[in-house]
Length: 148
Image (cartoon, rainbow, N blue to C red):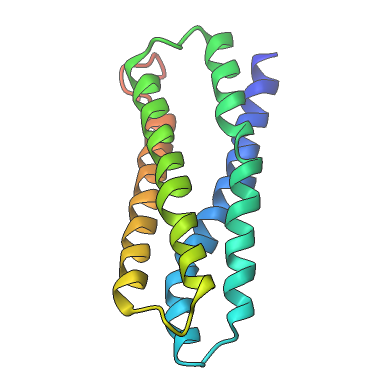
């Protein structure tokens, strides 16, 4: 059962977190180009929708992660508790900063200043950095018995 839970957890992370990370990263640059009419604003709507939908579906990643941790008996390990905290922080950045920032830009692209787009780019970078650290922690697992 543990192998099944871990497989679903890893597959869900790849299938859901990957698209959010890529779409969120593409949004600020695309917004800059759309603001000067080099790109269609419809592309921004698609990128935002990808972020929103995959973020909702992505809830299965921590759910199966917790089930896997329970199955492995590592729920109290420091690396996992840290990963859970960083995952919660990434979810907070996405829900409270990235998605609303994208929505603001979509609401008034012509009135969007470069500072809002820069802020969104920074928030997206923080979101991506948090996921990168979680990924490294999941692979390295400091103090684990994998010998790494």
